[in-house]
Length: 141
Image (cartoon, rainbow, N blue to C red; front, side, top):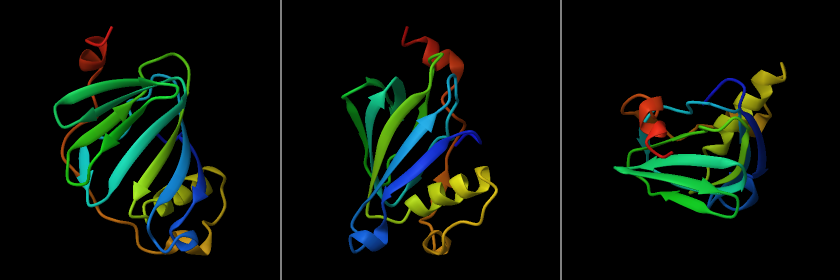
């Protein structure tokens, strides 16, 4: 994720027996987002403000406020913000664990130590390719 991503963990593994986590993310304008990747947990992206482009497998989905995208475990996916304004979305991970990654990013951005719970293991993420290229994002116009 971009270094200026803002994240707030709303529900963590320890709160619900490891079943799911919820993180509010704000992605800066014109952010390429993470590279194409996969992992062993499901992700649901629910857009609160702005537009989030999500690649899931071969599908490219542009989602706006009130819409969601789902990336099942094991399927290659990536996301980006192609607009001139930030996008704010809720990320729901099932099972939980990946919220620790976002808590670590937030702590680093604020120059503080991450909370103790965030130091627990984070599920493995397998990089598969580059972020969504700008020329692909331009095809959505």
